[in-house]
Image 1 (cartoon, rainbow, N blue to C red):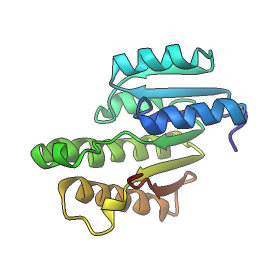
Image 2: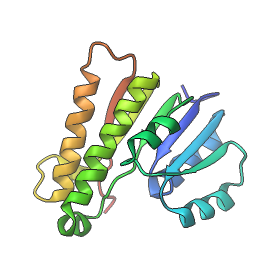
Image 3: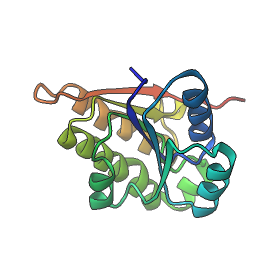
Image 4: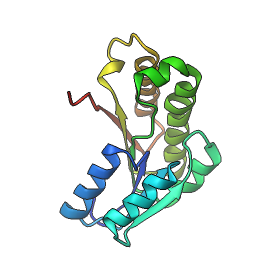
Length: 168
């Protein structure tokens, strides 16, 4: 499922992105891994860390629909990890959490379906189960969006989700 595939990791410069890229490069033979994030410094660090021609970097934001659609061209598999994940940040700036976690996710799901990506894996949170804060609420809605797409009878894309709980 991974070998010779082009993989997109949204929010790819975070802890999940670094871990999955390391795993993909060491245990599989991906054709290309595209890191899509808005953090130039983290992309620079990651580029130096991996130094592998199969890892490509695109500066962008999942909130920007057209950029997401352009980036999705030629992608086989998506790990959607882009999100606002810090509870205090989402509490102080709930609309920013809505824009990234809900609207950004919707952009990724729609682009993947439109392009015909094989599979999208959406990272959620244990806080989505019984949400009591803005982060959990936006992650719960992220899951609802993914589930609605997964139930679609017209889509060839497989949509699935995992809850990436707090390590501690």
